Length: 257
Image 1: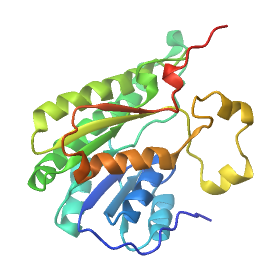
Image 2: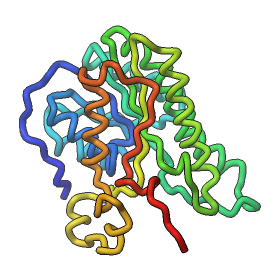
Image 3: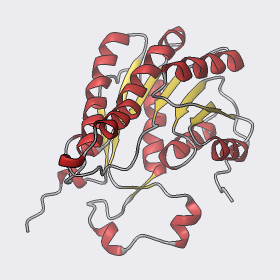
Image 4: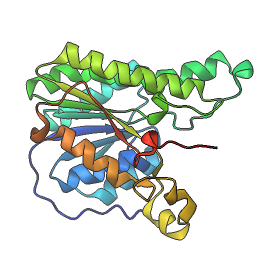
């Protein structure tokens, strides 16, 4: 049972497309935006779950299936959004091959590498390309979901780290190319407990997990969603080309042996 229900907010007339929205951070962002009055189009490869969560989120949620690495599917998906709602005000690029670990470098196949970069980096480029004309018409905004792994790594994470580092660079490049009409920013989450609320309650994280963070706890999807919503809002009209780290202070914490 999905417990992402958001009630009946007053619709503000604005339309957002959120990719990778069937679960985790993407779903949290979609739910938050609906609470703020947005009409949200959720897209994901997982068609059954995507349809279920859109139904659970209520009448201001609509689902389309899309592989963001396939330009034909991106073009068709954007056309669906425009056909249904007649406008697009925001794009949130969250879809990703989310497991940061790949095979050790010596056995990392080119196919593995290419798939991660196709989804995590080429996907946001394709979405920006096809959404730009419609975002420009309404002074819209793009938020890309990068990662603190753009700046720090564990072993055997080359493809993921490269894709997220590239996404941070793509963000400021797009901000220069698409401004001033379209703002483009990136949010880089750290450790976010992105499980469904029921799983979080059933299997809570340990005190040690929380204690690693200067804020005293692991992050939640709501922490990320609140920042994304602000970046898409009219309160952030002077903000573009930036990366915002949401990690409870972990990337500023010095650790000695």
